[in-house]
Length: 430
Image (cartoon, rainbow, N blue to C red; front, side, top):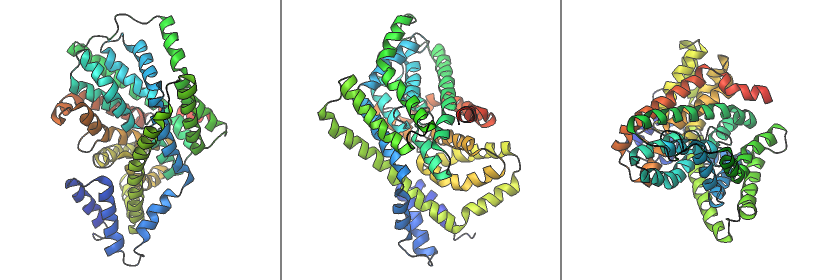
């Protein structure tokens, strides 16, 4: 591997420094390799790679689950889940912030997207938190941090991407994400309680809800809470594939919104399609570009050289995982989570498997790492979404983000060092 062969990687980071969008940066760097460095390859190889990477039936799961999440917002299910979360946790210190965190865990089974969750909660919950006296920047930080939970709880889109790239079972990845996702929720709720006590943020409810009140709100939300369980059971017993599970989710969301709750109307179909197409197009364009760049890395021999270097330097699985955590947090500062999964999995997974690390556990570690990166500068997608919606300044966001960043790192280290947190459910049920 020569300096010339890795020059597209150098160019990529130069483009990032110039604030060129991620997908465009990836495409320019890839085009330089196939157009000027590797003259033996046909010039159309790059385009063929991008098109071929999307001609995969399993990738249909991404637009299906994205669409299902949009439908649930229009169907009134999100507001009912918010009511349930407020009923369960509103009496706690920092009650509405606790609702913010717990709702992200509930939304994990519906939207599967951290960006969608951050946008939805920035619109719905941050104004309510401000009315109760919460600092707007603090509210934005809680929203961005809690959205890290959503893609880890099934059917998280990042879990689907890793399963496709690493050739592991989607059902195993879904089950493996449940306990780590709940761990993230608990750690963030503890952090909210500590910060709220220090700043004097009061509960949003005067008293703890009675069992009758909880039962009443649970009955309203049960249709939403059944979806992730139905998806996992359907995959477990082979009733449908992950792609078919996405299609079933869309049909289920339409049925609940139109028939059960009666809030989904014909006039909503146009906005639903528009939001779903825009959200899917952005994600898939980045993934196409990342697949093309990954093809360059393979042709240039970067994964093999990288694996040889790591195996020659590291012999302990624990040390490798800790090194990978640091590396991925750095990579995540520049790459969107989906594109980073496509790029980094072929580089790191061969080394991990040679050292005896379970690929499912490794996938959860990768996913949490790259999701946390979306919470942090300089290009954290959830951070910028919440900042854009709430009109909070970046410096105010950074001032409040420290405790939540360290809480997320603690959860990541626990999942890294205790593999059974991720592997207990897959080993038990599959």
